[in-house]
Amino acid sequence: MSEKNNLKIISNPIVNQSLCTIRNKNTDTQGVRLAARKLTRILLYEATKNLPQKETEFDTPVAHCVSNTINDDITIIISPILRAGLIFTDEAVDILPQATIRHIGMYRDEKTLKPVWYYNKVPMPVDNPEKYYVYITDPMLATGNSLKEAIKLYVDKGIPESNICCVCMISSPQGIDAVFEEFPNVQLIVAAVDSHLNERGYIVPGMGDAGDRIFNTL
Image (cartoon, rainbow, N blue to C red; front, top):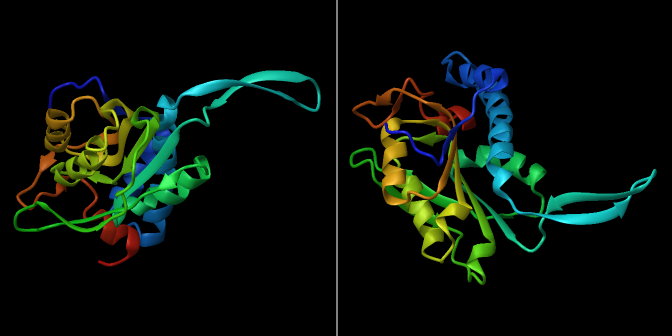
């Protein structure tokens, strides 16, 4: 994998501990969910650093204050790729209650490794696309095929690539290269870049099937 300016790998002791928990095959579903939610919150805080701010004035109980806050003249979209991407949603709504949630439903054909659509909640009109900020969430970036399809939905509406941020927990080098080859100006926030993909298209060492482990459908 080549170095990419728009790739940020977030590492700290809490991230590392959470990754160990979700990777461990002996961690039960509750443990995976709790660690994943902790991890997604950290990643979302990093991802949202690109939101534009504006100066605002108000009174505290002590004095008049001038400070920065998120500009309310923008549209913020959280777009989880179903089903595993839902693990980000609760944390995202807590952090950004003003955001719109637009679900994207795809599953991977296990033979072709291509995404198969079954749900799309993005057919919306877009005025002033430069004022849209999109966060596409998916725990695992493996081949990159599903993520590219999701990005294309928003790029086709005129939203700048630089306003689109993809947030993943674990990635493969192949998936990262595939995304940036087609969309070089999107932002990508990850907690780990693993070794490779196996013959089934699973990330190694990875965490197995994220959806099955998060939703207890093993």
